[in-house]
Length: 128
Image (cartoon, rainbow, N blue to C red; front, side, top):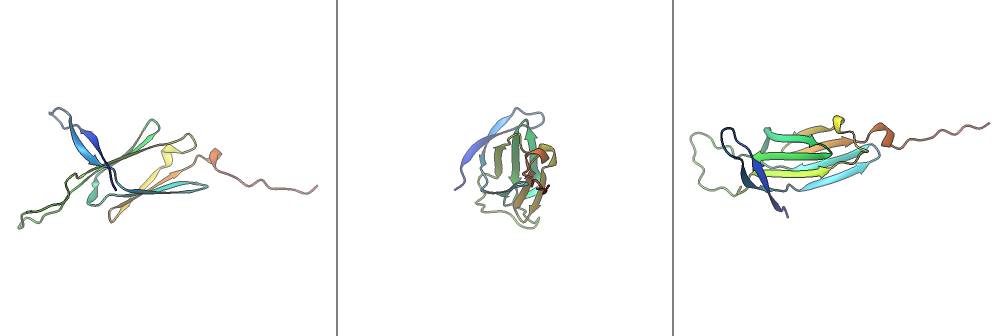
């Protein structure tokens, strides 16, 4: 189940305010070249998604929106806390400059590669 935390939201001309944020569900897969993070972000568009690395912390922030056509009026919504926030500490073996992100149908895929020196490599054996 997703848990809640608070996200400080800064708005121009207004004091920062705290709003509840949901921790999105994630799946993390590891291979020799790095890790892949899949995060569920239903209703979050590319424009409302912010991914950044602060020091050694990878931060995912997004805000979901319910698109409502002009001729309709929203009378019921179960999206109570549309802010999503999740962070992960990255070790020195990961290449923070080479992280890639892809958002498709509400699922964010992040690829966090290892630095070349941290990747295992095969040592060739020669016969003398």
